[in-house]
Length: 385
Image (tube, rainbow, N blue to C red):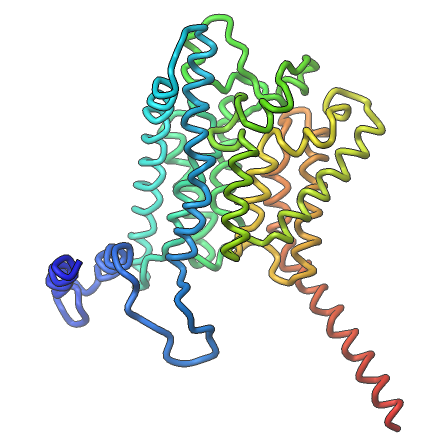
């Protein structure tokens, strides 16, 4: 590592202050901080000084995403070969899924990081590590057969409009990955609708039945998957959102490391379960009658609550606000699923809606705390008088 450190220091010399390529220093510094711990520290102001930095936080989230991603790669191949009715091995399924998903991840990172590097050089600031997570999240929440150019355009929109327009990492009010998905949903609805076939190479297979469970229910059809299939994730859907089992493994990593808010996750489950139970009592259509506990393990609910709603930038910041924020996401998710005839999924729109209102929630929570403290202060003054 010392040899690599020395070599990198030599390569950085032309990019140092006052040198020929100083303007492009953010690009080489980004490569440096990807390989080594950043050597800069805070010099003034109030800061928590410990070993945690943005890179470590983002890497932790990436690690938490890997179980769901790896299963999603396998499930992509599993859905493909099971529709063919042919015998296949684990490696057959995994290799097919890898062949389909790796190009999507590559496009996401190349387009997104390319734009981030351009803005960093133009604005003269360092490249932030936030896109390490966003670049992986975007393909994970897309249908498997979406064209690569659509992935690239969606990523470009998310980075330009969803993040850089607000000032970059830490300044965005919307989750960038969900911004990419919502753009794809409205720009290319035929590829994003849950009532279409979401199985790899579906157009090449006759008599395929690969709609998502929510798409099937919205069409008034019967669901033929067991509770275990839904929980394990052996069902059609976006690449990495189908397995609640492996999403929970990722949730445990986020909670135990303190990176993800368990309050938001718990609030989302409470809100979703409450609204699902109310609709079960009503039961006017198939989506309303779908058991509330199964609502929590199908579609993007679990993935959205764990990895999207807990985004520390766009989520609520106060402790009580996190509960309110999470509960409202769960409630709106199930409401949108049931009442939106064009799109039988709701977690994406629910989270983006609450991203917008997160500052308002925090504002009123803080104001309520201020009022309570003023009342206590007034009571103390009255007693002392």
